Structure formats: structure tokens, C-alpha cells
Amino acid sequence: MTSSEHRYPEICVSGPPRELGRQIGEATGELIRGFCAIAMERVNKTAVVSRAEADAVAGRCLELTREYNEPLIEELEGTAEAAGVPLLDLMLLQVRNQLTAEAESACTSISLQPGVVAQNWDNDPELDPFTVVLTRHPDGRPSLTTLTQAGLIAYIGFNDSGLGACLNTLPAPTRIHGVPHYFTLRDLYEQTNLDDAVSSIKRASRAIPANIILTTPQGPANMEVTIDDVHVLRPDNGHRLTHTNHCLHPDLVPINQRFPELIQSHSRKRRIDTLIPSSPVSDTAEHTVDLDPIKTALRDHDGHPRSICRHANDDPETGFWSTVFSVIIEPEAQQMHVTRGTPCDRPYEVYAMGTR
Image 1 (cartoon, rainbow, N blue to C red):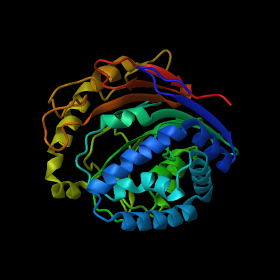
Image 2 (tube, rainbow, N blue to C red; image 1 turned 90 degrees about the vertical axis):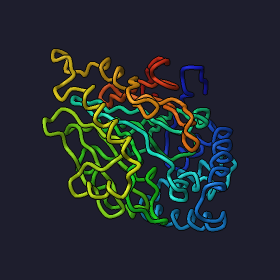
Image 3 (spheres, one colour; image 1 turned 60 degrees about the vertical axis):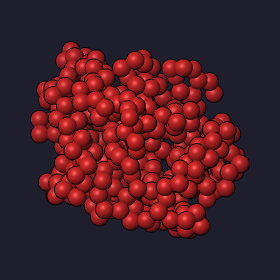
């Protein structure tokens, strides 16, 4: 496992669930222990419950997730054993967003036909050292490559069946117990088409809302996921979808009035729609998307400090946030383009799905 100033470490594992987990724990154990330490420090400072209550939440969510997709818990058990961390600590990584009040939402995402989904991931830059590109080849299931913090069961990425996904926060009602969205996202990567992807999210007992923007064999799609339902958006013109951090589906738009702080999300949505045309951004001869306009849009600083490409600023609560990475995913090519840091001053490096 090697990394550099501009590239994240790359890991490739294969086998049945527990063996996948064992290989992940052996390859990333030091990163997992470091991520656990910093995540638990944050939870202890900002959690709305005590540590004992947090452990109880993690235990209950573990049970719910085992009912939802037991092989994923078997993988997590293998990871915990090999990394030398308690299973409950590893589960706390998955549920930590259910225990704290989200300070701010700031990611911007795009899905384009044919076959590209992209995002600026805005968060705490202290998470960068724990980020890896992880390819899994599970026995009997689609292979997947994810850009993720070590120890998470899944995050942003794609599978070898043409599904690619990015994840945004979506302020909406929550509950403390449920299947963490990292697990629902991982279950999604086990699907091969949009209908099954939607069904995989719907059958989970979910704790917090999230927005999942997709590229699929059936074209661009977006799922606004609440604890009660999954609302699917498709592009009117068949070519483009964009999303920031407020609800767009007509049934959910009233929720936005309960979160007036999302005004900056609306401005980023207007800006990305201006930068990314509604007509195909593609080479019609090759039937591929021209990535340069996407990169230009993701480097945009209009409206700084709450711009698409985000940099640290003097906001007392969230000024330390920045674009930790920018990612453009091409599932059909089985690759993604990633900047380690802000895309305005870092190169997009290509990561291909690892081979067995």
C-alpha cells in the first residue's frame, strides 16, 4: 500500500465476506485505528448522547444491519479482528453521523449521460490521511471500487455493473436507530440496475437522510432518501442531474423551510446548473463525456467561501472545512479521476478498478 502527495493508497482484496474483511484489516489496520481515534474524539465532543449510550446505539444498529445484509457484518467482523479494534468501535465509525448534530452541508454533485457521476467532497481535511481507494472482489457479487475512509464498509465509488454513486448530506428528520447509510450504499453496489438499487435502499430501516446521485445503465438518477421513503429524480432532458444539500423532489421541498441555513446550498445549485449545460457534454463520435467542463465546474470559486470548490475561511464553526477531494467516476471504463485536495490546485489522478 503506497501513497504520495497527489495519490491515495490503493488496496485490492478478494474472497468471501470474512476474508475480505481480514485482508482490509491487515492492509489498513494502522489507518483504521487512527480514524477510530479521531472519530471517537469528535463524537465525545459533539455527541448528543453519552459514550455508553453511543455504544448501545451502535449495538442496536449492528443488529438491524445484520438483519439487512448479514455478509456485510461478517466482513466488518473480519476487519475488526485483523485491525485489532473492537467490533463496536468499528460500528461506531459507521453510525457516528447519527450521534452528532451536522454542523453544515457543503457537497456538490453531478450526473451526466453517458455514464459519469462526480462530486466535490467537502469536509474536515483531517480525514485526508485516512482516505484510501479500495477495490473489493466479493465471491458471487459485483466487484466494487470505493473512495473511502479506512474502516467504513463503503462510500463513494462504482461497481463493475455500471453503477456509480456519490453521497451528499440531506437535512431532514432523523432517528437514532437504523441501518447506517454506509451499509445501504454498500448494498446498492451489489445491484446491477436502477430499479434494484432503489429497492435495496427502500428495504433498509434507515436512521438518517441522505442524497445519493447515480449513474446507472438506465441513465442518470438521484435518490433523496429520508427515513420514511426514497424519492427518485430523473433528468427532464435525459442528460443531466445536479444536486447540493437541499431537497428537490416536490414531495420533499417543504422540508427545506425547516432548514433556513441551507441558503448557501441553493446558490451552489444555481451555480452548478449554470456551469454544466443541460445538453450532453460528450464526444458524440466516441459516446463519451468530455471531462474538462466538469473539472472546470468543480474548480469554481464563485460565492467563496461557500463556493463549489471550498477553502478554509474564518467561520468560527465550520471555517476549517474544505474540499477534501474531488472525484469524477466512469463506471463503464471502471475508473475514477480523483484530486487529493482542492481541485483548483491539485491534479486529477486516474484510479482503475484493481485486479484480483
